[in-house]
Image (cartoon, rainbow, N blue to C red; front, side, top):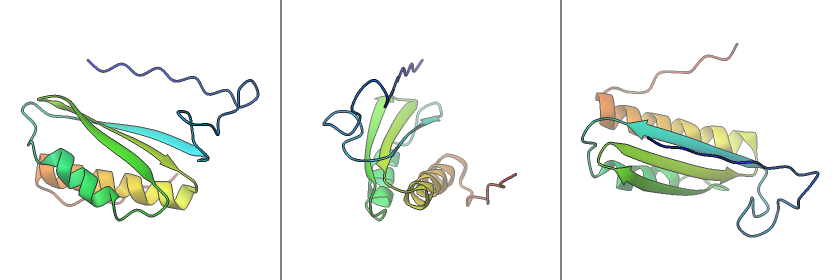
Amino acid sequence: IAYENSRIEPGKKKCSGIGILEGHDLYGSVFLYKENLNELLAEELRSALEHCPGIHAGVSQLSRSLLSVKLLGRTIAETQKALAEIWNTGRKSLLSKECVRIRKY
C-alpha cells in the first residue's frame, strides 16, 4: 500500500521555498507496481531522467514490488517529456514492450 497526501495552496503559503516546489511550477508522482520488480528498474529510471533538462526527480524503491517516482518541472513540455521517459522505461522493463502514444482528447 502506498499513500500520498499533498496539499499545495499557493494563496495561503509561499510554495517556491525549499522543501515545497523550490521554484518549479509542476509536481508529479508516478508509482510502478509489479510483484518482484527488477532491482535495476530504479537505476534505469534515474538514468532516463538525467536526460530531461529542467526536471528534478527522485526514484525510491518502497518495497520489492513498488517504486515511486517524484518530479518537479518548470514547463509542461519538460514535464511531459519526463513522464514519457518514465512510461517508456517502466513499460519496457515491466512488460517487455515499447511505449505507445497516449492519446489526448
